[in-house]
Length: 252
Image 1 (cartoon, helix red, strand yellow):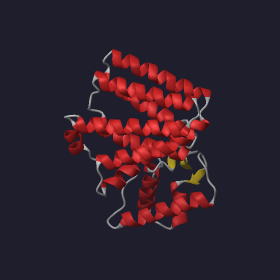
Image 2 (cartoon, rainbow, N blue to C red):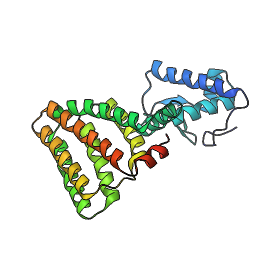
Image 3 (tube, rainbow, N blue to C red):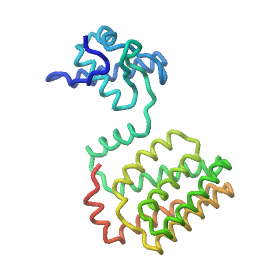
Image 4 (cartoon, one colour):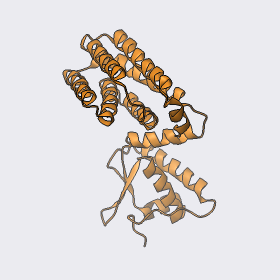
């Protein structure tokens, strides 16, 4: 008998389509039975019997679901297949695969990120908590220190963290997941350009203006300032002598 902790092998020729269908059926079963994270789905032999498919097809279907973050497998007598909650990492991968198969540009990705972030910020400006305001203020302070120290890597990282904090303040997990996915893809393409002192000061000032709109619970001002900030970032990339390199390097 093959245990659940052994590597999932791929099915033979022609088995991939069948495994994809089975993965869809298992996905539907999770929904129909109302299973949630941590619930037991079955052991490999149970799923073979339930589906009527070969062991190799079942393993491939489980591999697909595991990559999507929908299930985890545990070895041992009490092990088997358990439902899990997919995190943003799975969405990043799925979105990356989707965009790879279609013509996409860095400009289009930045535009999508702007629209999602603007929608989240409109909500966050009215829903923000005292903890959210503290997080934004501390991020601005860290960014200022990294700029003064010419610590470019941490400066870029802190800029990303600030924007993540903005979206998380919306309290909307769907917007947060989409933003995380797009932001990760943007990050792969925009880590190289180094902010000069003037540009870095502009970023810090923009962050503080957005935080001030949050403080005043003014969604219109927050969105307006966010859009101006992100438009300036796109313009900075275009003016940078590294923009063409980034555009050529941009691969999802």
